[in-house]
Each structure stands twice: as structure tokens, then as C-alpha cells.
Length: 139
Ligand code: CMP
Image (cartoon, rainbow, N blue to C red; front, side, top):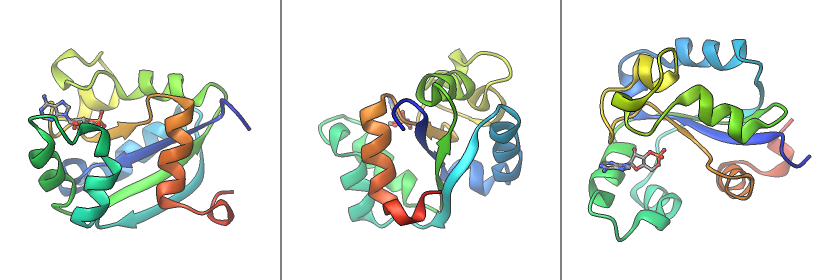
């Protein structure tokens, strides 16, 4: 099971701009399988807890306001080397630095509103997946 799961969120900006379908299509065409998926409108408490590691950062309040602004899609994705391959597919945090053809290059507008999240390590992929899904909800 190790090394084959990652966690993603299609963020409010991408949802509001109608990019969810195109982003999911790109993810599937890149060889990822959906293990779990749902639409959810994060509460302040959920966003603050999920991003607890950024609590002391100057952009924390802005990040929580953004992530609670509208419903998002959260999903667990399966593929060999999932974490690393997904980080490549989504591109740099800042869309201005994101390589051509990556999700953030195609669909993100700014560092704060960057369309998509991808886990940065296998440990975080597990922690983040279990934040939203029970084991029985992952296939
Ligand atoms: P992500 O890497 O998915 O998770 C942390 C998020 O914090 C990041 O995406 C950005 O959306 C946000 N973030 C990181 N750096 C900044 C910044 N300098 N200003 C605003 N938001 C940021």
C-alpha cells in the first residue's frame, strides 16, 4: 500500500471557475485512479485544523477564508509513486513558476488561489486522506 496513494483538493477558485471537470480529466488521463472522492464545504474549524502547520504564517487567515469560500472536491488518488508524480502534475505552488501543461499553469491564478492541493509526502498523504475519509470509504 505504501507509496501508491496521495490526497488532493480541487480548491474554491477552480470550482468557482468551472474547472473541476477538466482537472479531474487531466488527473485520470495522467494515470491516477480515484480511491475516494467527495464534494464538501469546509468549516472554519476544518480548514484551521487541516492547515494547522501554517497557523503562524502571515497568510494563514487569508488561506482559511479562501478555503471556506465555496465547496471543494477532496479525493484520494492511487498510482505507483503517487505523491511525487502528482506534485509534478500539479506544478509549483506559485502558478507563475508552474511548468507548461501542469494543473496550476493551466488553471491557477495566484500563489494563494492556486487551484489544487497535493500532499507533499507519503506520511502527509495518509494523514490528509484520513482527515476526510474512513478506511471503508477508500476503494
Ligand atoms: P498548498 O501547498 O496546497 O497548501 C498550503 C497553501 O498555502 C498553498 O497551497 C497556498 O494556497 C497557500 N500559500 C502558500 N504560500 C502563500 C503565500 N505566500 N500567500 C498566500 N497563500 C499562500
